[in-house]
Image (tube, rainbow, N blue to C red):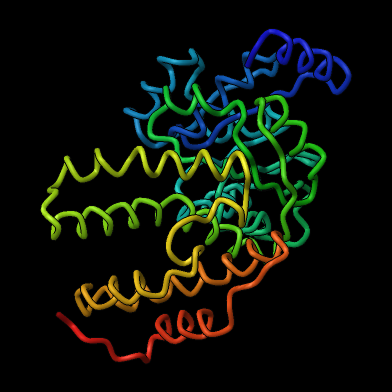
Length: 311
């Protein structure tokens, strides 16, 4: 975050007031959030984690005490539960069973797949439940600290205004999402991030069959992938689509399908069908359409039921 952005954050903090917060779960996300929020003027009261290794790493970035839940929870206004998804609910249940409830407090988790109401283990809980999900792949604490500013966040829950304020304090970009459709939001993130790696693996496999192996294959494909991402940034969807389906090159697609191993044909057809939809949208923006015969041939080739010759 540059000096100008930090100055704007500090002005906003003076208006809203400093937030006293605590962290349960000292993983990559929890550590990065705590460091950045402290840097802009909020106060981390302490951290609670079951792992001494995680705590020592946390403390190497932010020298805060390890507190029991009984010490931590009553002392904070906002409680970040940044554990693995599978234990978020059990943390909330533990707080409820131990009567560690502070009226008016905000409980915040950072899961992309779970709704904020996973924290509401009792309807009568006098706390706000909120979810702030960083739409980013953080490989390490250092990596998270370097890129959290500018990261987009999905926000949903009881106090979305608070969520937006926290995200802006982090230098992030907030987006309100529909709680009932959060699973689809998370699926979109998985497709964009995890399946990009899968697509790279598939491309490397095809290159290997053509004689370019392993690391050499990946190294040769990465500039192409970066170029495509650059095009997406510059011209967006669907204009960034290039290649034989965008051009309507039936013979090239037929050649691909004829040479693919049978186990890869269905994957190629599924992706190609989606590419054809984008191709239609791209041509519509240009005020043109695919020639009818060409379009029908492409649709036919990309239907999963089509039987192809395997050379």
